Image (cartoon, rainbow, N blue to C red; front, top):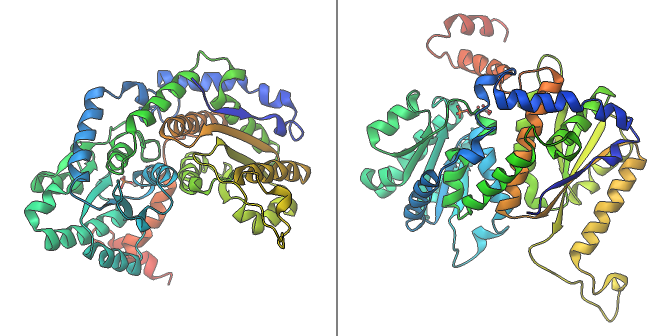
Length: 447
Ligand code: PA5
C-alpha cells in the first residue's frame, strides 16, 4: 500500500529537532486518549474509529440512493454550512473535472452549493440557473436549525416544488441530520424524504466520512468506497501502536506545535495543484475551530501556488516572520502535457520545450520551498502519490488525527466551538427573534 508521507526536516533550522521529538510521548498519549475517549471533548471522538466501522450495508444504501438520483438529474444542490458543507466541496472540487459545468455529455451531475452564505444575488442567480436544470437537493444540518442553510432550503424547496411538483420534489430531496431532533428532522419526517443520520458523537468538521460527505459525493460520481478505504488505511497508520517517528499525524502535530511554541503563529497550507483549493478551506475550518480558543492557537491560512506567489509570495518571503508553510505536494498528475517547441522562440521558452508542464511546476515547488526557508519560513511537506479518492481519504483522516493530537498538545478541547455562538446571538437580537428580547434591547442601545 502506497501512503502519504511527511517531511518535517525543513523545520529543524527553526526549532531544534529535540523540541519536536520531546513531544513524542505526549503526542502518542494524545492518540491513546482519543482512542480510549479519555481526553477533553471525549463525547465527540466518534470520528477516530469511524472509517473502519463503516459497514458495507451503509455504503450500499448510500450508493443505491445516489444511483436513483443520478439518473434523474443534471445537478445536485448541496445545502449546508461549515462542517456540513466543506468536506463535500473539498473532495468534489479536487476530484471533479475542472470544467465539468461547460462540458457536453457529462457523466456526472454538477454539484452546486447553497446555504453557505446569505448573498441574495447568489441565491437569485442560483435559482435562475436551476430554472433550466433538472436538479436534486441534499440538505445537511446536524442541529437542523442553522439559519443560513434553513433559509436556503426554504427557498429552494419552494423552487423545486413549483418546478417539479410536490410529489416529485419529495423524491429528489435527501435530508442528512440528527436522528431525532431539530427542525430539519421534523420537515423530513412530515414530507417523507429519504434521510441519513449524523452520529451524535461526530462534530461537523470531522464528519466528511459520515453520510454528510458520502451521500452528496456518491451522487457526484465519487468512488466513496475508495475514499473510505484510504481513510481506513490511514486510521491504521496513525493509531497509538505506531511509533512516533513513523506516525505521520504525530510528526505533523508535533512539528507545528513546536514551531508555534517558538513564535510561529500562522500556518499557511499551500498547494501547487489548485484543485486542492477547497481542501484547504476544509482544513482551515478543521484547525481554526479546533484550536482557536482560550486566547491560543495557530491561525490557519491558505494559498494556491503558483497563482498566489504573484500576490502573497512577497509577504511570505519578506513579511513578519510568524509563518509556517505546509505544502501538499502531489507526486503524479493524472494526465500529461508537453511544452511544444516553437521555431521562432520569441517567448524564449525553447529551453524547456519537450518538458512536461508538471516538471516546471515541480521546479517552481522546489524553488519556492528553498526560497521561503531561506527567507525564514519553516516548511512541512506532505506528499500524496496522486489526486484520487484513495489518497484523499488518507489525507482527510491524516489531518483529522493530527488535529486531535495538536488540540491536546495545545491543552484545548479540539471538539467544541463555543466562539461561533457570539455572532448568532447578535444576529438573532438584531432580527428581534422571539426569546431574544433582552439582547435586542441591549444591542439596540449600542447602535
Ligand atoms: O464544525 C461544526 O460543528 C460547525 O461548522 C457546523 O458544521 C456548522 O455550524 C453547521 O452546523 P449544522 O450542521 O448544525 O447546521
